[in-house]
Image 1 (cartoon, rainbow, N blue to C red):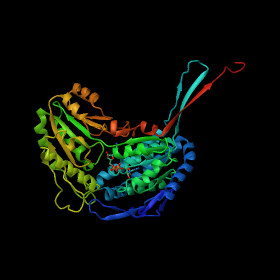
Image 2 (image 1 turned 180 degrees about the horizontal axis):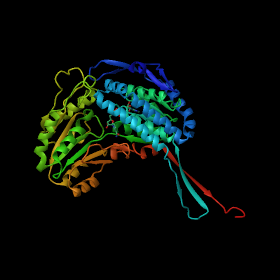
Image 3 (image 1 turned 90 degrees about the horizontal axis):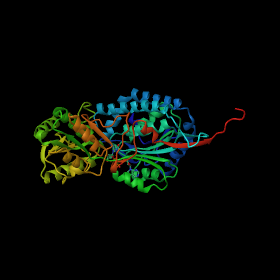
Image 4 (image 1 turned 180 degrees about the vertical axis):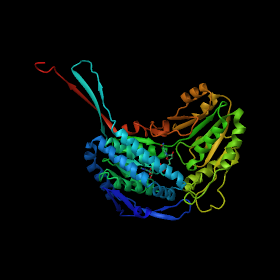
Length: 485
Ligand code: NAD
């Protein structure tokens, strides 16, 4: 599949060769080059935008049911080729094939979810002060969307935007992350196979600071749907040159609180999953854990042992591995920096802290647990985006809440507790867009998902994830009693 996507852009329904295919893409497990992508030129960006603009009115004018059929077909062709798409993702991103396959299947589910939502775009009738007026509110698609996406979930983060936008009646130009472009192009190819009309979906590749920035500044874009770091999100908000709608899904620094009433084994299992899955390269990763002092040492022993038991391997060769390669040198170096900083400030290393043996070439790191952490340490206050977690004890719930909320981020938080009063108290006090209680899956496709504070504005997932691509229109009409009535 990779050969067909090498050096391609998706413009006006064609996977066409890029004019400047000069950006290498490498396998993070081996360092070997797997292909190249184009550095989209301004003419190619203009062509993609013009194509999306031409396609907009006809696509928006389709009956919602017809758009839904397109999205259902897209979900079906993606699911049918999930294995090949997963291998593409593993080769460029590093996550084990089974995990990549799971992500592709969730993308297919997203297509079906938004296909169904497309048929449920209801309006509202609002009473006026006098009975001779009707106020009707209808919803209309915003127009042409620029979707700018990161590399950690290269299928789902494209899919949430693509499906929400298409269901609403918008057309889209996607700019995927430089290091994981082929998953996006593979999705583009599936859009062609599913018969989505030409121009509705376009993909341009290249550096964010050039190609992404050109989309942000373009007056022909009606909405920006961005997922990425808080730093780039803020830059995008500041650098738009015309007023446009924006959703910004940004970074996180997510806490987990384990109270004295918690099921210890479940808390340890949850902590290991959400700290180390995808090598911790997930915006809702558990970065820091606060444990009731009575459970603290038992929790540490169990989490350290669980981390030590996880398999780290080349995800292409061992599809079932718990962790594959990290996606690039950047998150790996940050992980090492945060570990060194924690140890310098007096933290205790309980597990990991080094690369696994035999993987000198790629970006590998063992799942790492550090204890006795404080807010003097970067690991407790910054997003690491790596397979490392800091743990600290607490004495009162208010102390745990104050520490959990002591951050500029507000994406997701986690609670493990059995006592109903504790659960209610904590879930109301945590200043986060998502609170997961006795589980670590903070985002599901059926419910709105978004951050607050520096974690972003707007929502993906759920009905809200489609309404973000729609404008409201208020139609106020005066009526008279018909003659002769
Ligand atoms: P990043 O901000 O460096 O890049 C994200 C995208 O923006 C890439 O496609 C990049 O090319 C592009 N970009 C960079 N500079 C740009 C500019 N000036 N104008 C326009 N586009 C530009 O982020 P990353 O390193 O790829 O991803 C990791 C970050 O994403 C983490 O902070 C993580 O928390 C966040 N993230 C958030 C969510 C969420 O739902 N809130 C989900 C996944 C990842």
